[in-house]
Image (cartoon, rainbow, N blue to C red; front, side):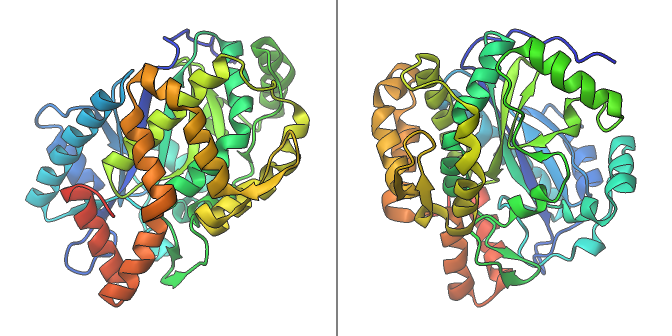
Length: 376
């Protein structure tokens, strides 16, 4: 079937999706509680959307469409409070974090939904290993071509989002030495990575998607697990590299950072994207996953080597007028503090591992961070 038409949406609108962990508050392992959570949440209005994810120990929430950071943050806080209250009734804790530090993937149960069953049959054990947790951010685009332009123009900034959101240092009970181990699980899927370099929707539709569909490999855009992908049914591009942060405050800040970047890029203040920009893409991506804010960064246009931290700070300064226009300076201030002072949530979790004496203490700290306000 043909690729659905790209729905026009208001430029620079934004929406957030968060995949969240359901945790047993006694031993802090994952709890197969999604069915019960969703049943109880359906009994009264929820201030957003909530749905199952691939295994029973996770759920996904989604905000409405927003234009301002403060309004997005307010809705995320309302959603958090509703989730926490529901979890308390079921004796289920909820938290962010890109991975659960000690859950055993083979113990997870696939949620009883036809698409999840199909994915499990196709991908085998990878489906259960996909019990990882990410934040997705949608940005509205005035046209399909504008969406493809933004998708590729953002490629050099993707390491920023990986490093700033990183919250998955532990997996299967051990320190992976990565700040974001979650993305290694995503990269195992054959249709992950980067989108093909096409800047016109008609070329994407006819020269790429139609050929891929003819091979029988894909049926819809849902089959692509790219770092950024177009979402024609929403009229957005979707950033998918972020770990789920430990606080909704951090989630809102990351979304507003993306919004400000897109505003700058649409003013064509930088050279247009090119295929050669991707020569350093995987290197920069790895550095951000492995070392977080301490990673190295190669500028794709100039080949200049600098620290990722330095590149983020320079970008934050450059975005000041755009944040002022969008009303999101508070979001950029938070990310400045992360970059200069507090560090990302991966560093927070490693600190909690030492202070709390183990992986269960890390999860306890993540649960407390989600329900109270923020990790520091």
